[in-house]
Length: 255
Image (cartoon, rainbow, N blue to C red; front, side, top):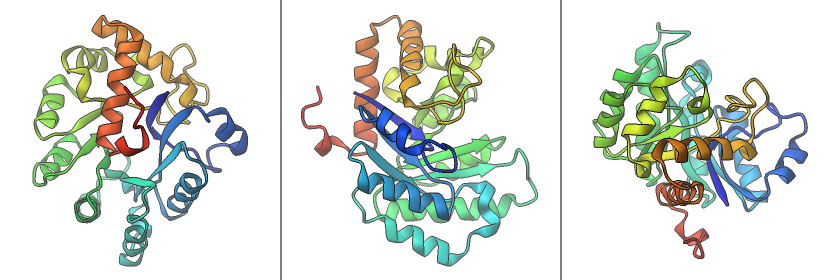
């Protein structure tokens, strides 16, 4: 068993969705949404497939289409036991920085929903790491900093808040010394394994469409960096995900 804590498995990303679902039957997947349509899709997939769970939320790139009505719809999903997080949410100043305050407001509203329903959050932060940190520092909440790409110092600051770091295929990229250094310095108990499928396929498959079957390359790289056996690394990473997403009742036989 391998748990992928961040994927985007939906009909927009995969033309062969049914084939992919069958292919991933032996994997546990936290399937992330970004907008109204994908919220519906990830919940439906989770309801119909025992190995899929849903994270629902509004990505900052979709901020212009989000109203209070959308937030009410989002809230309606949060009593579903297969909805285990709010995500993918956060801040993105890479393409737009003219709406920073609006992005922060949406981020905070979704954090407050997560607190209300005792859900962790999955956080997108691009060119906005300080603002992301400053907002999270105001709340006591379990947060996964998805696709972490900042410095060791920033990683340590987030971990002191109680956050975990999402690490995926970029760890295997030959020129990505920064993430390798983070993986060396940060205890494995603070890392969540992810793919960000269909994006960011690891070496040796970089540039292809990603899926959860490629998690083995990331686990192998983490095991190499930590100088531990693959099985030991995988066991720790799975336990991290089970605890973070409160899945213990679903995996009573997990050791």
